[in-house]
Amino acid sequence: QVQLVESGGGLVQPGGSLRLSCAASGSIFSINAMGWYRQAPGKERELVATITSDSSTNYADSVKGRFTISRENAKNTVYLQMNSLKPEDTAVYYCNARIMSIATKRYLEVWGQGTLVTVSS
Image (cartoon, rainbow, N blue to C red):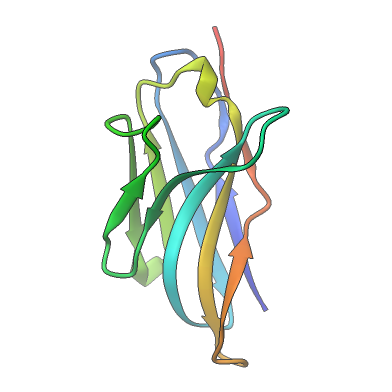
């Protein structure tokens, strides 16, 4: 019915930048909060940043001042600008959103497939 597709991951050197994108598609009636999570090897998935429908944001302490989350409602897309990247930012990054489909008129939590970010020299 609805899906999230991430893009923009890759290999970057420490101190570099990357921009992740996540586009929602399908039979979408509305989208509430959107966010990014990450999971490093051997660790649990953790919140990176979230943004509400009125663009209020929340960040993990580890990324404050370095990462910026934003959304473009007309395109059903959320972005994560990552600056001053560190090796410890290496992880699979997952997009998440609460989406109401046209068919059900109920909010469901939807996850993307993940995109790998590797920070290494």
